[in-house]
Amino acid sequence: MKDIGVITPAKLRNAAMDLLTGREFSRAELRSKLSKRFENHSGIDDVLDQLCDDGLQSDSRFTNAFVRSRVSRGQGLARIRMDIREKGIDQELLTRILSEQEVDWFELARDVARRKFGNEEAKDQKAKAKRVRFLQYRGFNFDQIKYALAVEVTD
Image (tube, rainbow, N blue to C red; front, side, top):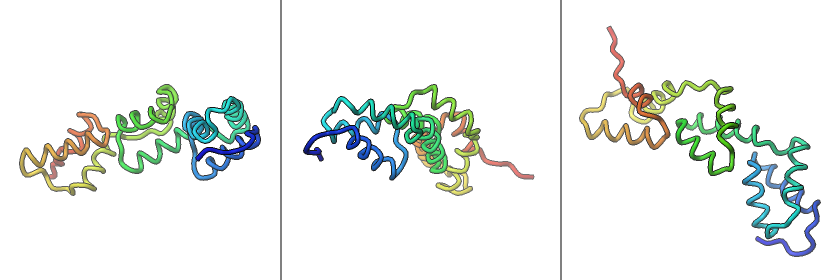
C-alpha cells in the first residue's frame, strides 16, 4: 500500500511506531517495510536513527527476543543463524546474544527429538534417517543429533 500525499518525518515516524507496537523489528526490516510504503523516501534512515536514539528500536533487543522465541520452538543454532541473517542482523551481535542466553544445544536437540518421536529407539535405518533429517532441518549439527538420538542405558 503506497501512501498518498506529503510525506513528513512525523508521518514516517508514526508509520514506524505503528509497526513497532505489534512486535520488535530489526532496523533492516523496518527500513524495508517503510521503503515499500513510502517509495524509498530519503528521510527513512533519519527516522530510524531517531527511533534507535530514543530506545524505541534496538537490533540487540530484537535479536534477544528472536533467539528466545526460536529456542522455545526447538530450533537449533544453524537454523537460527540462517533465519536471522534474513532479518539483517550481523553475526557478531547474534554471537554476543547467544553467549548471554547460555543454551544447551545438546539437551535442546534431545528434548525436540523426544517430543517428536517419544523415547522409543528407531526400529530400522529408515526410521533413524527420518529422525536425523528432522533434527537437521531444525538446525542441529551432527554431534547434537547423535547425542539426541543416543539410547540411554539404564541399570
